[in-house]
Structures are given as C-alpha cells and as structure tokens.
Length: 149
Image (tube, rainbow, N blue to C red; front, side):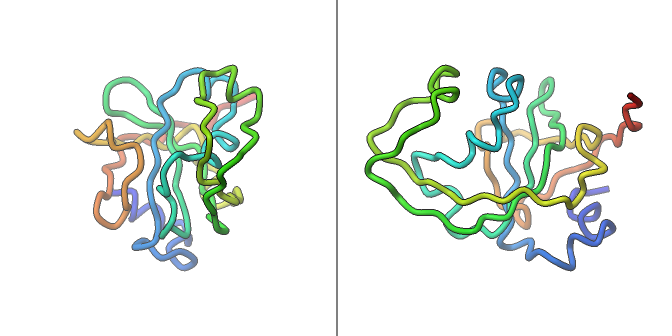
C-alpha cells in the first residue's frame, strides 16, 4: 500500500490536491524529542513551502523508516529580513538567521488516528527532507496498533 492510498481511503484525498502537497521528514532528535516540530517548520531559510498547500509530516526512525506526525495546511508565507526565532529553537541549535521565510502553518485533524502509528519507507533520498507527494509516493511499511494509556 502507498501513502497516497492511505490518504484516499481516509477521505483526506477529497480535500487536498496531491500535486500541491509535500511530504516532510524531520530528523533532528532534539526538535522531535522536545516536540518543537510545529514551531520549527514555520521558519525556513529557503522558500520550501512556497507552492505548497499542505504538508504531511513524518519523523525519522532507524534507517529509511519514518513515523507519521501530522497533516498541516500552509496558509501562506513570506520572506522576512528580520525574524525573532523562538529561544527554544535557538537552544536546539537552530541558526539565528538574518532573514528567513516565515510560514503560517495550521495543524489539521486528518489522519490523527494514525499519529505515531503509520510507518513509511522514505526511500533512498534521506537528505531530501521535503518532497512532492505526487512525484515521490512512499510505501507504507506498517500501521502499528494504537498505544493504550
């Protein structure tokens, strides 16, 4: 099964255009461990989400495996010459840039029942942390059982 098929089966495919959707893989352990992903992806040195409406976000596991984190809508973004990067990101080693793209990113509930359960094979391009979903569909390796409290 492919990630795009999971998206279609879930009904999310009725709401998003896969050609305007990127998959994102975060691998910075400190950002993941301290749950700063949402804040982290708002600040980018390049316009990586410029033509993108949605991102489907994963965190790196061992080797090429990645764990589903969430779905986000990109409500726009702009380059800012001066940005106050949150201190918690600076403490995690985020570079205090003189300028960066600042995105308005909104977390959505789509696929939330698969958070920390859906595992994909990212493939060979581990250094390509953001990819267009329609051109780089990923194989679903596992759907883990729900974690019981």
